[in-house]
Image (cartoon, rainbow, N blue to C red):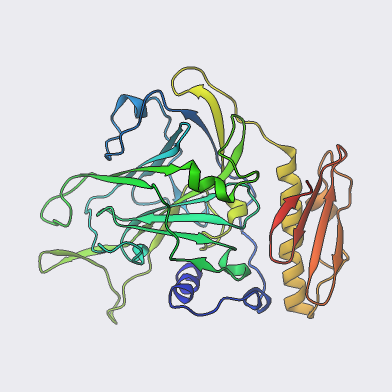
Length: 368
């Protein structure tokens, strides 16, 4: 699976330069662009991070939709339920999660172990939505964490900075059942996380914690292995050759392929000034997101063109893009593309004066 092979190369220290993307097409998601949304309200009281999501402060926060297969709704429904909820205050972003699980197990106890080798819960945060400089946190049912910083997605050369830690991070796990005991059936496990704005704002633009109405890009993932019981322990199910069966990948926002590192497909979290349980805000669709997606279509097409024909192209029709794929209300059609032997830049100008750009390494940004 792409997710496992690419991430394993990075973990083993294999250099991931931008030539990685140039070696092949950048696979385009096989589902429509329709990320989920969530309005995150302020916590009504201080949040004690102890894994207990039955406290009053959490009961006012809405659960997300149930997770889907990472490839989208056309794939089989996940065998077990997974949901998240969020809150925020002046100091932290809070995340709570429920993972239904009849056999809760975990083996890894050292921080920054390759946590997805166990069943795990993962979160990803791209504060400014440019698909670069984003955070990843993974944890298992033993509350062992792996936190890392991605300069770029692996498809664009990475790298992942594994020595980076979220200073001030708080995490907790509560198991509804008994951990690592196959003699009974469990209900699942709860995750509670507090992520300090003091760290998260470093990848935001401007470098500040969010204001009411701001939207950040997030995703949540769950790695789930099929298991058997052997010698009184829960073990990964294996094929006839003894190789563990591939994991399931269940997510909040499907990416349309087995690769979570497609930040453009992640969900939108909108921050509200209202306290959870005291009023509601509607999620606001921003037209600039459609313009950014049109530029992303150019990015996929340029890499396909280079793989097939050996060069980027400034011509949208040569790229195989149709007008209906790119026309966005409020933006001056068509977007323009400039190319060199090794670089390209797509530009979309809004009628209100905003200008959005994308370049060959996938970063998308607005002229300031």
